[in-house]
Length: 33
Image (cartoon, rainbow, N blue to C red; front, side, top):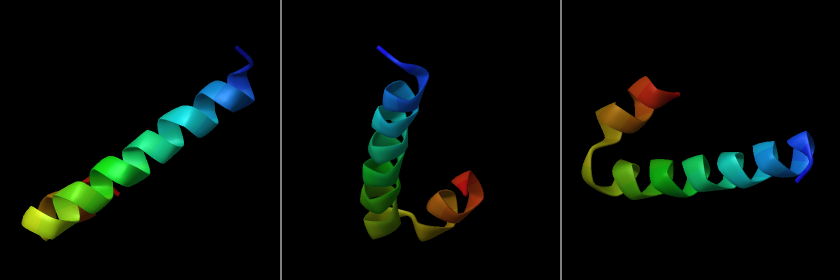
């Protein structure tokens, strides 16, 4: 796997996780960036 692809995959997962956290704990999502 290339570095770009890996970074893209991790980025999309973090984005999804951030959205999930935002529904229950907005302040946690803000702290994570």
